[in-house]
Length: 367
Image: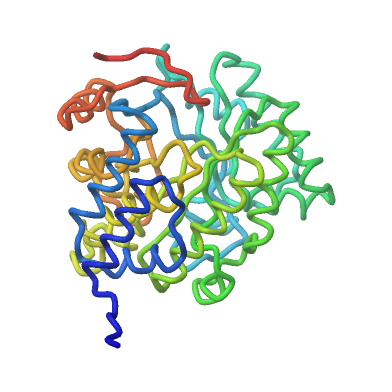
C-alpha cells in the first residue's frame, strides 16, 4: 500500500475547499498559508470571503487622531512616540488646550475622535476622565473612540479601580468605543523580548471582554514584523477569534505593519509588500467571525491599501488628521488623507466607497 503525502498544492486545495464550504480554518491551515508563497490563491480566497460578507462596499470614516500626552512609563522597544516627564518634546495637554487644537483643524464632517496616548503616571486617573469629558461637552456630536486596553489596565493600576469600574467612569464622560492598540503580538514570550512593559496577554483580552460585556464595541490589532514567529501571528489571531466567539464585541481587526525607528531606514528594515498583503488576506480567512478587516494606509501606504481591497480588506480607516504614533516610528505616508482621495482610492479598486460612523452605520454611499 502506497502512502500519499500531501504536497503544498494538495494542502492549498484542501484549504480552498474548506473556505468555499464555509468551514473554519485551523491553526495548521493558518501556519501553512503564512509559509506559502502563493499570494494570488490566498488573496483570491480572502476576496471571495470578503465579497460574501460585505459585497463590493469598502468603509471609511471622517476622523481625527488626538493625543493628550506623550509622557509614558512604559519603554516598549518599538515605540518612538513616548517621552519621559521633563524630556524635550514631552507634553501633557489640558482639556482646554486640546479643544483649542481641535478647533484649529476640525471640520463639520468629522464624526470620530481617535484618542490614544502615553501612560503618564504623573497625573491621576481623573485627568483621563476629564480629558474625555471636555471633548464630549464641547463636541457632543463627535463619537469618542478612546484609549487602548493597555491604557485601561494602566488606569486601573493608578486608580485602584477594576477594569469594569474604569470603563464605566469613562463611559459616563462620553466614551463610546475602545481603540485596538496595545495588542502588539499576544505572546508573553514576545512581550518579554520587545520590553512590552504594559498589559499582558490575559489583561489585554480581559479588558476587551469587560468592555464588550458593558455594551461597548471595540477594535483590535496585531503589530507584526519584528521578532515574532509565524506561529505567534496565527496564535494571536486564534486568541482574538476565540474571544469574538464569546462576546461578538469586536467590530474590526487591524493588522499593523511594524515601522522602523527612522524614516530613512532602508527597504530591508521594513516589511515587504508581499508580507503586508498576506497579513490582510490571512486574517480575513482565519477571522471568520469578524465583519471587517482594515487596511491601515498609514502603515502600508495608499497604493498597497488599494491592492488589499481585492485581498480581503473592507475598511480603509479614515481621514486621520495629524496621525503621530506611526510617523514617530518611521512611517513614510501622509499624516492624513482627504475624503476625496479615499473615495478615489476605493473606486480605483473597483469598489464602492461607503462613509460610515464609529459603529459601521452607513452615512453615505458613493455609487
